[in-house]
Image: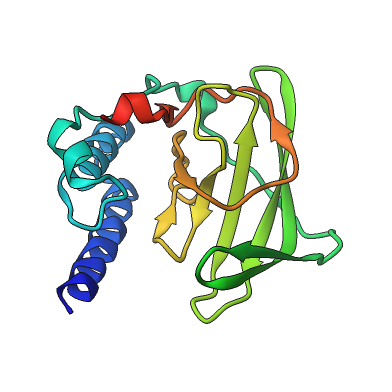
Length: 189
């Protein structure tokens, strides 16, 4: 039973982290620093962390890119898209269903980027804006700018960092030097 209470606590803390990141009364770089510190604390200390107790004991924090204001974007959502539904099998939870509802277009350091915005078609619902970039250093799954199930809504605050997810995407964006710089087991412990 404690495991379920720990999970509820973990999820509340994740939502609180992203709520703090969206507090526009605080300068953006301070919010970014808070995000890094709060995530490292949660990953390194919480019983629901993906890290084993041994890894948590040796955890020194993740490696992050420096804040880069040039990677802050305000973009319009193009709603003229085919509303394709994707089903992604999850190991223990069945299929994760999402429907494309729009796209965003922008330039990263001169390279064109096109990302699909999805509606999550499950009980929790919400929006999901994933991306996978060409970096060989970042997490091999998908990073995201918006995942409202987790309270991770970095798109609304105009921030330039991302988090991690295990859901795949179909296109690679150019190298986006933002968010977690390294996601290697050797970096974790």
